[in-house]
Image (cartoon, rainbow, N blue to C red):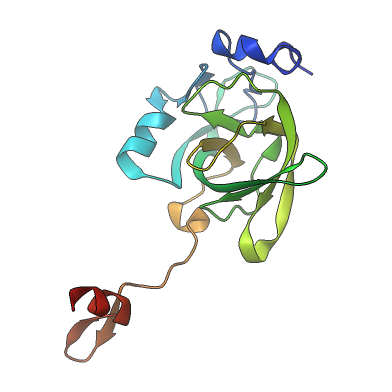
Length: 187
């Protein structure tokens, strides 16, 4: 348990600690953001939306941040779509991504704002993949629209975390036709 878990109001002045061995090289936490190799994850979200990924060299475990010459690690930012509180106080969080093997759930971090709320137990809801527990929970005031950053072992592509959505246009032999939803809007 960290000091920011015991006294959550400290999160306005000091960030929750991160395990440097689990994030990509040169990762630094602030009270509202995580910077990976000099690039703000909030800036990546501004440019790309969510989910988004940023890959860099992995860290050699036990070196407090020395980059590996051969291994990669990825930071992923997901958007919170909805939050439900169960009767036992657990937060059920629906996100806009599909997380797979390699995600380090114990390092999930709220970015974009500093929360002074106590930590609540939480579960990420991943649609057909079911749900997974976040070992250290998240701030209890998490709401739809918040951003959560997580590290992955290995290089992860955007296609690996972005859920499949049906295309807006359907290919035909004569070109592209608008689907029925868009056609109804044009009428």
